[in-house]
View (cartoon, rainbow, N blue to C red):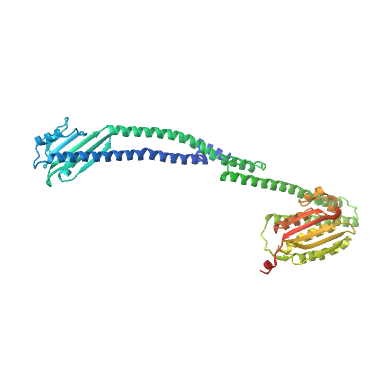
Length: 488
């Protein structure tokens, strides 16, 4: 008992389910129970029907013979042994085992049995007693592989019961037929059970094949093998489940790759300012003769790196909130006033780097979103266009409506982005020119945040080279609201 329990525990640890607890065993047991029920019905119902048919046939036959004998004997007012014997000699050969004829008192006047002749004895049998009361009686039973049938009828002359006729039949021929049927059914049942057992095992294994494959795949994915896939077989629910599992593992693999890349990039980005801070602090601590001006310069550099760490942390928190997909209270927001506010905030930065900021803002460009999210999208796009522009350059900002979409277009005249880098600029921590990005205070997260925020409100952001191959053109598109919806 202890050894069996230990084996069960080891099987559970390894993820294996004992056969008697598996779905395959349950399927097999269910099918076997159904087959056994069918076999049970096959071995009982036909036999019962055959017995009932035999009983019905014998009842009809024995009652008919009893009435025939009774009619032949009811020719006079008195029954005598000689008269009964003469009448019985005139009747055709009766297909019964024994014939008894009694008078009205139950005295046996005739007995055809050669083994137990009870002539001039009283027939104290229930059937005879009932027949003397004027009843037709029949009783049959199948016992010890023999049909035993009894029938009795009164002998009536002008409304007076003169006696009774009792017939007894001991039938082994019909019993042999019934036994043959029973044997054939038993043989057929054995064959059915053997075939059913083989089919049950095959079908149970076939039905649980996808389950076993899926269970094994889940274990492999649990161990970190996210590239593993299951090949769906068939078109049933298990095949659909396998397809859903493959799609889930696709997302898990993508998420895992993004997570690893994100952790790697975040670690690298955080390590750079931390290393700078550590280097600057070591320089101050290890140089006792450093003058106050140098200390202030180092401290200022430490403050800049701390600010950089703060910006990275804030943007990482923003991305975390976006990934959590928290529900926002959306409301109709006009896009043009939000962009105008962003332009007003970034005006001093544009003038400081000698970049002209032009805005063309059309009305009736309402979006179902939050004002803060739209502000963040516009701010990131416009700030990047200003920071990575050239002195004397220009940033054109356009808000317009194209059919059922509200569009924010930001186009600059800067150095532009190589065409090979355009698909990657929305990746987290990706920079086209890393040295220039760090010099401008960038974290490589702004465009990622902008795009995730736009998609949160069923929008999207795309990038392409500017007109004439100069600069870059960003387009943020959102589903526009109709005036009826805004009023409603």
